[in-house]
Length: 265
Image (cartoon, rainbow, N blue to C red; front, top):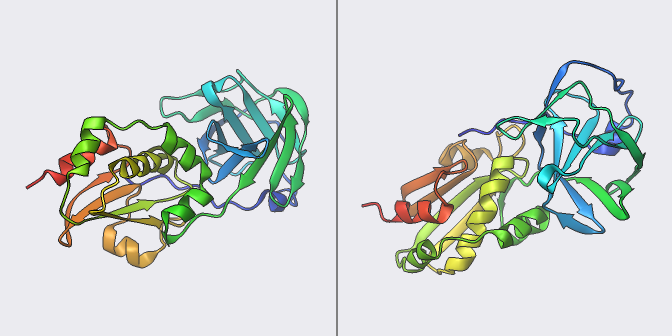
C-alpha cells in the first residue's frame, strides 16, 4: 500500500511571512492528519492531539484532541486560535471534512518562536512544532528522539502474549527491515506497535533496521530500489531471502502476522 503524499511543508514562521488567503469560503475542504507536526503540552510531547492540514494549500491547522472532545483551529494569517469543536465532521477514513473554513470562538493569539507556535489553552501551555522528516537508515534511539509520540504509543500497546512467546523461540538469525515515513499517519499507527513487540520478544536472533523515507517518497533511492517503494513496510529476511512482508496497517496484530511469516516453509 503506497501512502498518500502531503504537499511540501515549510516552517510556520516562513508561512506567516506571506500574504495569505482570507478565511472566508464555502467550498468543501478535506483535511488529513500530518504527523510531521507534534503538540507539546506543558513541555511534554502528546500523542493525544492530532494535527490536520487541508489537502489543498490553505493557511490553517486543526488540532483534534483525544475523543474529539476539543478541536482547535489555528489561523496562520491572524495568529489566532479558535475553538471549533462540533463544527467539523469526520469521514470513515478519519479525515476531516468541512464546508469552508470552520468558524468558532476565539481562545486567544499564539506567538511564533523558533521552536514553533506557542499559545495558552485552559491553563496549559501548548506548543505546535513542525519537524523535518527522518531520511535514511536511523537507529531506534534516533527515531524515538525525533518522533517522541512513537514512544508513548509503543508503551500503550499490549501485544498478544502467545505470539510474543512464539517470537522468543525463534533461533534462526532474522533480519527485519522497517520502511517508514515520519510524515505518514499509517506508519505512526503500526511502527510503535512493532517496536513494542520487538522489545517484548527481546530475541537476539532479530536484527532490525529502520529506514526513513523522504517526503515525495523518492529517497533514500538505493534502499527503495532494493526493498520497494511501499511504506510502511516490515520486511522479514532469513539467510538473505525474504520470508514475507507486512504492508500498511494489517488486519491481524503485527506480532501475529510476524509469527505467520516466520512459520512459513
